[in-house]
Image (cartoon, rainbow, N blue to C red; front, side, top):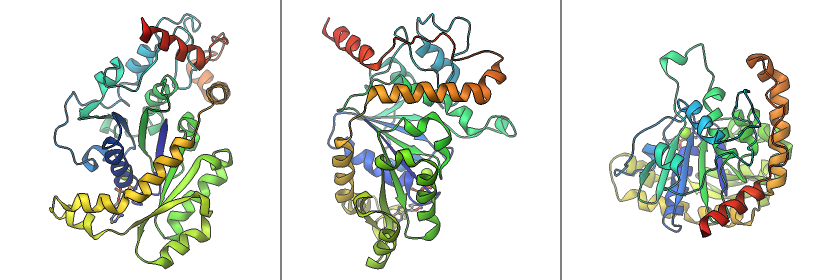
Length: 324
Ligand SMILES: Nc1ncnc2c1ncn2[C@@H]1O[C@H](COP(=O)(O)OP(=O)(O)O)[C@@H](O)[C@H]1O
Ligand SMILES: [Mg+2]
């Protein structure tokens, strides 16, 4: 199960996703956190001091990650594997576990939280790679992740409607928009639904930095009631915490708790249809190949791919492997 936090810059995506990750970690055996924002602040917002492991930016490791996931597949021949290339039965897959080889290599861990970070721009990127290129490793990661209903993956994402343009847009089972009670903040959510109406059903809202009942009513003018998961107050505890009062973080957590319960219960009702996921991945891959990838690489990148592959097959093989 995967959830992404989206919204306008400054609305509270990182604060809210970090809070939700801490909340989940207090209830569930393991949480995989993903910082998929160019402004990589999730690690700091988790307020842990005991991180272990080597720090990687997976945006920089995309070629190594894609090459690992390629495994023994032969269907590609000499053709390049990219972020949207659908898996084959001979691919390597990933499990939501701190023992998974890819996660244990690239994630930092603190207790039962593992954190993957896509990473920010380098000076050498200026004028060159856009953030979408950095996200290709993460796309391939998600398209090879065999997560079940008891696996929890939480991503803090880029501001605005940016991820609609990539195959990450359908990689998450649920999208949570963090929306401040302002026109601009609500507009980012409305714009998202305009460009991605097919994702409306899985997209929800948390009203953040709410001071008064009028603030909540303002949000309800634009967001259907059944899509609003709740409101988090404009917290004086968070400000205290940021001023150095450590214990104020727990008070802020209490202010968020009811909303987080609702996020979790709504999320748990979502069931991924793996066949639809694969179909969407295949059609997206074909589209980006025709749009520009084929020209860019000078190859037909979607030709000859393993058309017999299904995620069900990969999941059942994994179950059998776990038994022996
Ligand atoms: N509920 C809240 N109450 C008070 N301040 C908040 C709240 N949520 C976020 N903030 C503050 O708003 C600022 C932006 O939050 P952040 O999570 O970094 O936004 P984003 O990731 O969307 O850019 C930070 O200074 C954060 O402390
Ligand atoms: Mg942020």
